[in-house]
Length: 108
Image (cartoon, rainbow, N blue to C red):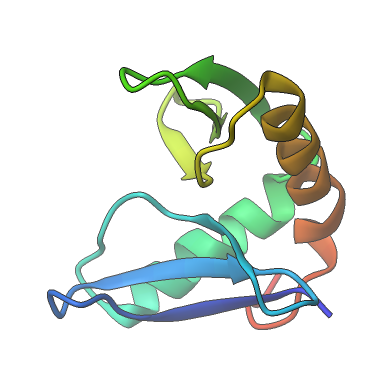
């Protein structure tokens, strides 16, 4: 089962992460929030809008492929790890788009 977790990052700032059924982290907020409550709200918003978000696959400065999901305000709502191929990054983004809405841990 996919699940969202909102907690403090290593620097002690609230954020959220999305884990796949195999316990692999597949997406994260990419930003911190004023409180864990706000991080949960952001995770919930991504959960609701994951299927309709605008996903972009791009090559980073190091030559790796990545994906990010944009919300309507043109702010990055989530992003994922790096991949060696465009295809792998696209598939990862598709899995997040298709599964985030059913993930546990974020109130919808």
